[in-house]
Length: 143
Image (cartoon, rainbow, N blue to C red; front, side):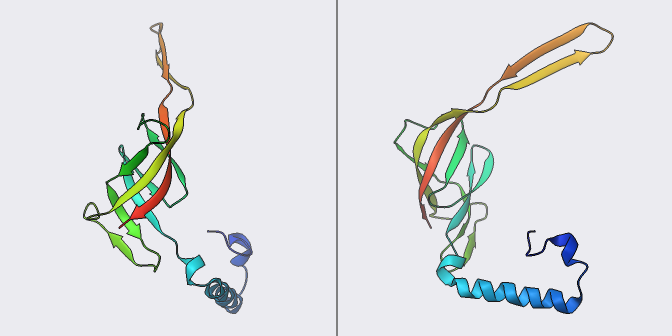
């Protein structure tokens, strides 16, 4: 939780000073205005993982999702926050909501080593793999 002075220093100050800092932070948030304070985001489920996405962000999805430049749609939307700040949560998915993106390309994850050993038996086995990911640039959230 980042603060103006950092958590260890903030705990040494009096209650009045902490209250003044909280008032100053809320005043700064109020000056930002509603358009900068709220933004659209969604939490989607993609291939067994839950990801928080917003328009313009790039996410990595397991496996190959399609050709570069093609449109890709995520239908399993768990939660959507709209511009006004109202949150719509699904049970388990939000009805008629989808996240649209464009396939940016493919990348590979780090090389993983799987090493198995049984002590005093002379058994040692090394295996490994690299996962393939697809980069998807989010263009729109429709709810």
